Length: 577
Image (cartoon, rainbow, N blue to C red; front, side, top):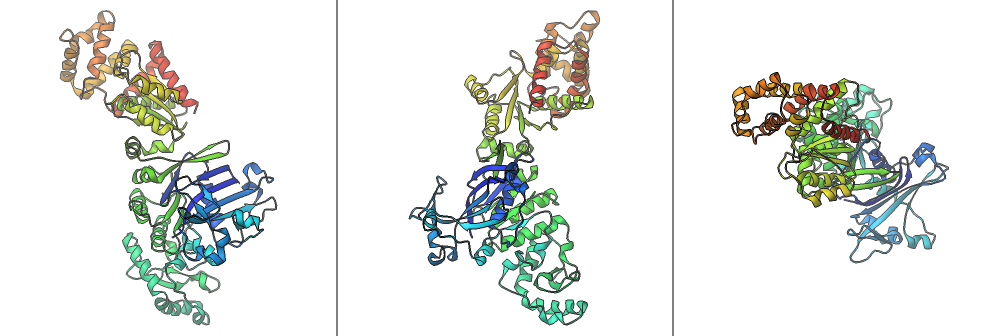
């Protein structure tokens, strides 16, 4: 059950330098597109995979600079007896400190015994694999892993095309389930159709245990393969050999005809059962071909919820469903600055974990705007919809995700913002000013590079809207509130906010005989944010207000300049991502 303890990549594709100590279980890489997630999986596959011939090109070198050699090093721990054999690998056995991540050249009592395998590619494009240790270098000793050990350590990869794992081909997961081997020689002398049936009878005996395991796994995962899985010669193969034996359902239809999602799900289940022989799994875009409920099943089959991880898994995803199902300790953000890559664990503190559950999409965007409540989220969404209709690029297209802090504690937006900021996200907070945050908390967030946008002195969003918009827009907002809640409730709120000095009718008449007074605007703002019964206290309500009233009012001019300036600065921040 070998585990990769440390990964070092130099000058490979878009990665100039990466050093990472992965977790022993699930390592789900997230981050913006082209950040290098798939490159990390490719590096592991190329270094540890059991292939005799691999072709490299100049494009595999960082910035096409072939004068800087590609180097991929994997330090492997939890070694089996064969890999700790002193006669075979004694000169290359080293010690790994899990606390510091350092590798000592001599294995020591308090350190884990490990091997470091390095793949190097020079300008001649010829790959070379070698085990690494200072002791061996001093003695000019070199060696690679034995082929048998490479085969055993080789990771299984589940990509867009997974059908190779549904046959007994080299490196297939089926060859790792049991020690059984099939002999097709008796069937080769017959015609293809007869040989297929004849071999099927023999294979049922020769591969009985493997077929039983496959059948059980398919049943557990809800994949219909009939009552019995069979091993038959593939009718599409031009010749018959071990690699042409593949899985078929009860009617003899090849399982490679399964949908992409079903094939990936079945292979994941089989890999779990083959963990004792091969414990490293690589999964590109885990959601590919899977509906949300099967993404959950897929992760469950890989042991995502188990205390002791059965496999070490390196996967990539852009699925909010996957993020919601995984714990913070299983998620890793990959960041790149000038070719220097860093991998940061999302973490398991309460603020981060709750944000993953409610706003997993935010972890998939490069920029995050933390909104104090649903009203601010609705405002930004509605204004964005209005501006998009005017041919402006949307904030989502510019990589900005909105997070709702659900009101309450005025320091909460900054705690959530800090959780994102320490992971390399670009973060801003949009807050009310009727309840002020702790000064030191906001200052620390700003000093760390976070942006803060706040409504003006002592105002919540509703105060700002009713104070700042034109008279016509204020009346439209009042009419919309009546449409949503009825005149009686709006009347009660206005009377309460004004301590009985104003009525709904008086407010409506006021513009007809003059203009809305500042006092009336303040009363409307206060009434609109009545606790637990706010007029627009939902994303959808404020979204409509922003799209149909605030946006057009801003475009028409006459809106208070201070309020308009805050929104201009907010969208400028989004643009500059």
